[in-house]
Image (cartoon, rainbow, N blue to C red):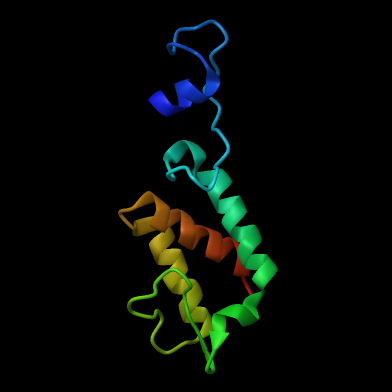
Amino acid sequence: MKRKLAKTGFKSLYDSDYDDDPYEYNSRDDVEDSNKESFIEKEAHKIREKGKAAYFKRGMFRCPYCTTKPKPKDGIYEHLMSHARGLSTSATDIKTRAEHAALLKALGPI
């Protein structure tokens, strides 16, 4: 909240012109609840620009965010979407949830 106040120039929440709208995500910011939607839009746009073929290598679909242990192991498109759907709702980290929500939004149904 302090960073949002610093960006807006207000000294406190009780200033007369203070507005609690979500602010735009910038690449140097941390992903928080207040800028999650903006982050999802920007990530989805990046994914759409690359296209589905960028995530299909060696005959398998892979999640671009799960690099240490490639998910899903079988590489089927439906399983990639299931993986993204699951982590977009149940991951503990906000950034992980937002990244997988963006993947789900950008690639969507075939």
